[in-house]
Amino acid sequence: MSSYNFHQYGYQTYGAGNSNGVPVHPYYMPPQPQAAAPGPVAPQPLALCRWGHCGVPLDDVTGPGIKRHLQQYHAADMPPKSSSGQSQGSSECRWDDGAGTCQTECRSAVAHGRHISTVHLGQGRKVCTFCSKNFSRKDALKRHQEQYCPVLQGYYA
Image 1: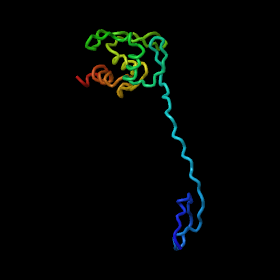
Image 2 (image 1 turned 135 degrees about the vertical axis):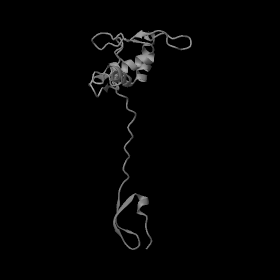
Image 3 (image 1 turned 180 degrees about the horizontal axis):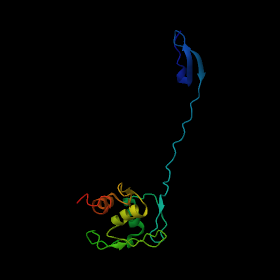
Image 4 (image 1 turned 180 degrees about the vertical axis):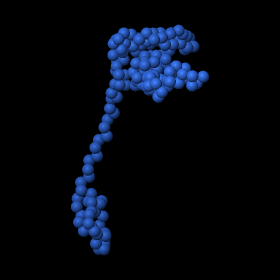
């Protein structure tokens, strides 16, 4: 007896086969439909822009993401640039957290983005392991530990 290929017709087999390789219990298993791959999901905003009265949802709260938003929506508020593209002067941060406008001076859109991301949106928070003071950036924590931390006073001298 020749071996019959049940699989070519969508049959699955189970049980032991006989000596000719013919399955004892063939059954039909219709092909299962493949679940459609989900389409692209719109990113959820992580925060709302609080520069003035903007309110645009921000889906990238990193420094570069905030910089892109500032350049797209608030270019007139950024420090002026020279003909070579260098920032000239500075401009005030206009982020309003409900207690008033920040007014920290920043020298470029990059600096504004980094400032907003770390100070106002709390990205990359760092804590001094010696005195538990919070910092918005690693460089500020390092400066604190080297110059100002009351627990480490004199350690770096």
